[in-house]
Every structure is written in structure tokens, then in C-alpha cells.
Length: 471
Ligand SMILES: Nc1ncnc2c1ncn2[C@@H]1O[C@H](COP(=O)(O)OP(=O)(O)OP(=O)(O)O)[C@@H](O)[C@H]1O
Image (cartoon, rainbow, N blue to C red; front, side):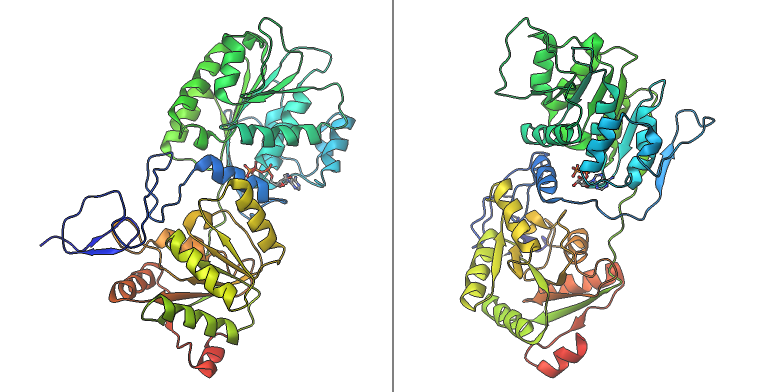
């Protein structure tokens, strides 16, 4: 007998064989294909470059990480340098002034090891991996600014990033850090930035996207690749998700000399990234900083049995009425459900923000910013923003719809990402799961087993019980 079939949004279709990439259930979703080929079950596009830009737009400080940095040196016999202060790097005074002016007091964890390697003489190649927000961009911006000779009026450092917007973001960091180095100039090798053929760029640093930078090197000959002494490839994992970018990066790399210092950065390190990294960075030193593990230890988990969405809504309101909640995040499966819930919560007088996939990155960043600043207490969202956002004061996460994978099974990883954002930094948090069918009860059981953590039943109509359980 064919297995129970679930649609792309997790909706049960019955016991028949259905092969469709279009949602056939009442959610009306037409799923979009993600850049790296996968479907999102909530219809929101997973665009790695967008995700990365969003992170940059909303990040104003370093991500906390207590893990040790793992360093693999090309020459294990050479002493391993790490610095605890920026002074130890013996930077030019104007550059040091720029670093302090950005509010950086000391190097971040990854910078402690990466900076001495990047600034070493003779130059050393480096592959560095650490999650977004740990200080990679600041590190290689500093390395480029320190590396160039301002007296030489030609391009010496080349940096490529996967998109126009990401290149602009990096450029801003370089401009800010190099504020007191007026002789160091920067050019943007991005679409729309037309240059006259035949001239040679005088800017010492060029930051751009692979296509334009390749054109500038080969077709327009604005840059002499043989004079490039530092090549930086940022967001390698995002870069290789687009075949064209991967090939263009390799073609740029081929034009450079063997002595050119190669630096590659990535937030993740799957095999494909590694294979690419090895191709463009010969004899590398490798620095890796493991992600701080999300933990469920400080989170109390509950489930509430409900009939249908109206019932879930009532449960949510009861929960809210009886608890002192700093801020809450509520996850829905579909944009449609998220919009419905937002409208109803607003009607009840809650200050609610909605985050969903059809918004531009800038709109999403502004919603998150407002929520972070406490302007709204509730954030309703689909999976699109379940990663990457750190809001320290979230005390309650509600799975209005449980996370399921394409086969309708518990999506444990997404569950962890969703609820892992509460109970952070030693604070206590609560996660409440809405169960509206036998299937969703099965999912709760699967999640319990997977994490070996109890998920307690909660009756939201019993105020006393709720208060004692959730205290
Ligand atoms: N040494 C430092 N001290 C304080 N803040 C820092 C330091 N280095 C970087 N930052 C800040 O931390 C945030 C993250 O840094 P950065 O953008 O360099 O990280 P990243 O690893 O490149 O992440 P992403 O790819 O998301 O930009 C930025 O707001 C940056 O200004």
C-alpha cells in the first residue's frame, strides 16, 4: 500500500501516489525553486545570498562564540601567532585609528588567529570558516588596507563577493575602516559601474562581483591581474551555489600570479566548498571556528492539543494573556497562515510584526530591526527567517505549525533552529507546539525521541496549571 502522502507544504494528501511540485492543498502555494535547487515547503525562497545580506543588514555586533578556534598550519613547525590586541599587529597609525573608530576594542576570536596569518611576511594563503557575524569581513578588510602601498597607483587587492549588494556592504566596511587613510582608494567592480576601455584603474583595492571583475581583468583590461598581490574570495559557499560565479571566480584566479596571496572565507564548509577552496587556494593555512551549538537545555517545551486554526488561535491568546512574555516568535507553515494569524492577533490588540518571503531583504531587515528594538512584541513568520536572527529577549517560541520535512516527518533541525532562539545566553525560554491532528502528535513524539527531551502537555484553558508549569 502506498505510504501516506504529504504535499510540499506538509499537508496530507491521502493514501495515493502524487508526484507534484505544486501544492495541491488549500494553502495555494506555488513553491519556488531555491538557487541551490531545493524547494521550500513554505513556498519561501531560500536564497543564500539574500540570507547573507540580511544577516549583514541586521548585525551590529559580533556573534558570541565561546568555541576554540581550530588552526591547521601549512607548516606545522612554524610558531603559531595569535594576537589579543590590534596594537600587536603593528598597523599603520591611520589604519589603527580607523579600526578603533569603528568601536573595535580587541580582535574577535577568529581575528586573533587570522589577522597575524593574513599580515605575515612572506605572504601566506588562508582558508577561514566561521559562522556569519564572527568578524571575517572586518578581518580581510583590515588585511587589504594594511597590504596596499598607497604610493602605487594601480590595483593591488582584488576582492570578489557573490552579489552586488554584498560587494557594496564589504565596500562600506573598507571605506569606514580606511577613513583615515585618504591615499588608499577603492573601486566597485559591479554592474552599472561603467568604465572607459583602455584606462588603467588607479584604485589600490577593487571589490566586485565575479562577472564584472572578470570583464575588468580580461575584456576591458582596467586591472592588470599580474600586479594583484592579494586576492580575497568572500562567501565561498554562496559563490559556488551559482555555477556561473564559480567558473568566473576560477577564471579570475587563473589570471593571477602564483605569488599572489589567496584568502578564502566561508560561513559553512561542505565538501563542495572545500573542493572549490582547494582549487583556488594552494598550500593554505586553515582556520575554523565551530558554531556555538544550539541547546535545548534551558528551554521548557510544551504542546497544546487543538482542533483547527481558530482553536489554535484561542490557545495562543490564552497563553499570552496569562504569561509575562518579553517577546515571542510564532512560526507558521505558509505565508497565508502567517498573514491570517497576524491580522487576527492585531485585531486582539497585540503589537505584531509579520515577516515573510515576498518581502524585499530591506523590508525584512527593517521588520527585524523594529522587533529587536522592542517596537513589536510578537513576530509572526514562515521559515524564511528562522535562521540567523538573534533577538536576545525572545522568551517564547510558538510553533503554530510544526516543522515537517518533504515526507511529512518531523524536521528536527528546523525545530532546533526555531526554538533554539529562546533560552539563549543562560536565560530561560519556553516553546509551545500546537498539535491539531494525529499526524502532528506523531511529529511531537518523533521530536521528543530525537532530542530525548520531554515535551509536556499544556492545557491553556487552565490558568493555574499553566502558571505553575511555566513558572
Ligand atoms: N573586533 C571586533 N570588535 C567588535 N566588533 C566587531 C569586530 N569585528 C567585527 N565586528 C562587528 O561585528 C559584526 C560582524 O562582523 P563581520 O561583518 O566582519 O562578520 P562576518 O563574519 O564577515 O559576518 P557576515 O558575513 O555576516 O558579515 C559587524 O557589525 C562588525 O562591525
